Image (cartoon, rainbow, N blue to C red; front, side):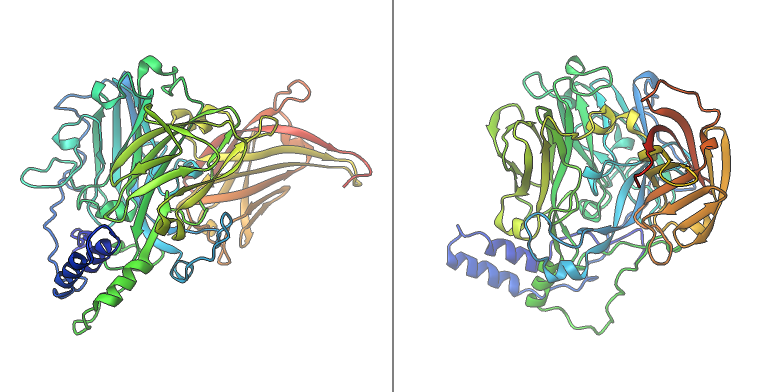
Amino acid sequence: MSSLRPRPFLLHPAARVSVFLRLPVLPSLLLSALALAFLSHPLPAADDEPPPSIWPTTTLETGDRGGTYFGQKPDPQKSRHYYIAAEFVSWDYVPSGSDDVCGLTLPPPVLATRTHQKLRYVQYTDATFRTRALAPRSLGILGPVLRGVTGDWIVVTFLNRTAQSLSMHPHGVRYDKDSEGAYYRPDPGRGAAVAPGARFTYVWHLDESSGPLPTEPSSRAWLYHSHVLGDTEANLGLVGALIVTDPKRARPDGTPADVDREFATLFMIFDESGLSQPVPLPANGRATAAPPPPPPANAPTLDWARTQQLLEDGSRSSINGFLFGNLPGLEMNEGERTRWYLFGLGSQRDFHTAHWHGLRVVEDGRRRTDVVELLPATMKTADLTADNPGSWLYHCHVADHMREGMFARFTVFARDAVGASRDPATAFLGLPSALTSVRLEQAESVLNVSVTPARADIVITGTATVPDAFDPAAAPLRIQFGAKSIELLLTAPGLARAPRALFRYLNADDSGLVRGGLLQFELTFSGPDWLQGVPTVPAGNPRPVPLTLSFGDLTHITTARVTTRLVPAGKR
């Protein structure tokens, strides 16, 4: 089967039966008749159905023929340009390996296969598509958040780094045929099916009908997703959000003026049964695991019971792609006005009820509640005032989904706590000011006079984006700190050294590789001269020092704000 023509994600007949069995309102006689009708049909093998004919509308040979809106270039002064690639990822639904919220024992199928091959939308810092942008942890599997105010243009240069034709199709905004990003006959646009390795630039206009009504909240969110084979690619993980704000009720940076913090959550049951088309892998082997081989020609047809078991075992009832309380980053401070953008996707089982413990929300500006109903392709807005400090449960109230792990924890920090960062780049989703590839958690100059001779170290810890399955041995490390530059050599797995400098790859595995696209590091400079030439600042203030980390041709540039700490004599 061609990698450009995967089998569509269709509900298996056994799953259709299970849906009816979950509807107690139907008379038992009707249930029996329906079940017998379905069971009387043989269950198709995985490849029985012929694949649809998908002919790429943009290829490497055609080049990028997008970038216009009904033949005209958008106004550059009102355009927000994004660089987004579709890429493979080994996705772990339960990265902690446990349920630390409700204390439930993970189901054996989840425990046995936590990680699956998925596809994701990944944002890059520029058109070179070399340096990935950091994504907020709370987004999970969701792609980058796009945003603007009514009247703006969203311009997305899309690069397909997978082995099948894909696209980006937005809800709610205005576009021409080429930027629709959906494949269907008789006349698909140029951006309907972007071939592997090809690029296409979509242009979407945030016209007045894209934004909220005057009676609605000041901002609203729409889904975007790949739409070559309908919902197939959404099940693979290609889903994201687009926020539109009313400019009359917005700050200069485009964020809603009556909101202090934003969250986006997708309630969706992913199908990992293997009955739908597996993720095609490229010839260069960039993904870390292969899909299951096709069954032998003489393999027996699955019976109903086995098929039903596979569907049940493969269900992953997730919030943003995480199960059993593993979704991080839902944090806010007491008194903050938070806005939650809620989404539902999936199939017949995806009827969800998002419920917050301890607090109440206003749904779409019209009613106060603590439960919001979601259907497939639903997009809703819920405003929550964080007036009750504590750690609270956030979950789907459908009993089956709750048992399958569709819950998370959110935290309201008390006023006297350090709490969540109030920096707009952290508090809001998709701001240009948040476009960075490295985030520093600590930058400290430590003068230790408790040892002889006295020791002066600069310790910097942080996170930087890297390719998946990143090999430090294949990427020479060069660091520039202020006016000083140094090259470090890998001396052991997860450890690079130079005279008076040490770099630790904190999350390298036993083979020395860094997986998951994020590198956690600790950098130590020894000696007081590392700060020579750095401008002095008033006592107690951090010293801004330019910092560049280069891993081969991958470069991260940031500023370390170095604080000073004294370890006096007699202390360690």
